[in-house]
Image 1 (tube, one colour):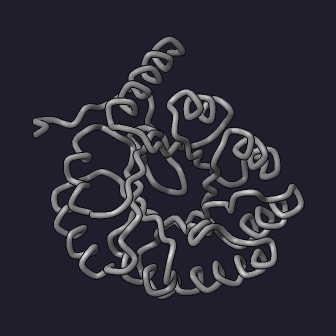
Image 2 (tube, one colour):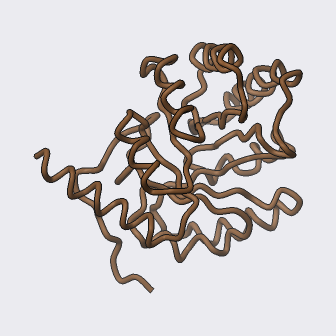
Length: 227
């Protein structure tokens, strides 16, 4: 049990209207009962993927886990999106729409993404609270397909893009010219650090907590050198 939450100085930032203590988050899938032990680590956020087949029980667990916790929480949605969106809206600090579920989206399905996002953006208008919506880009996009999706996102009110691999982070930053925040998603702290260096606002890591904390300590050291 953590007696205090570590704070990594010089890494605070604001993204899509949210204030992050630092730009590094952990990605986790499955039971929300595993969230509480991670909230005292000093991470910028947690990105969790619910059990879509039993989402009501998952949300009940999440509500318990979130009591007296101030860590920012992203909920990554993959299935039954409209219903899941409505159910998690009051518990998430921001919501990630993941179009890579069920083996990914085919090129023929790409036109469905703006239709789907339009529905969720309209649904958001029904709530008093504003919760940012980010799109996790489909894997394997051609340059033309990426250009089309990003153009839609910049015009529609999507609040951020999640991109895997450094090459895709660079492409998104080049196309959007900083008009929309980018979250890099990686399995290694080395690539995550490079994503931040290239201009990503946040990074999401699928690693063990000590690996993420080591990255944060290195980022803090670099920030101190620039002061």
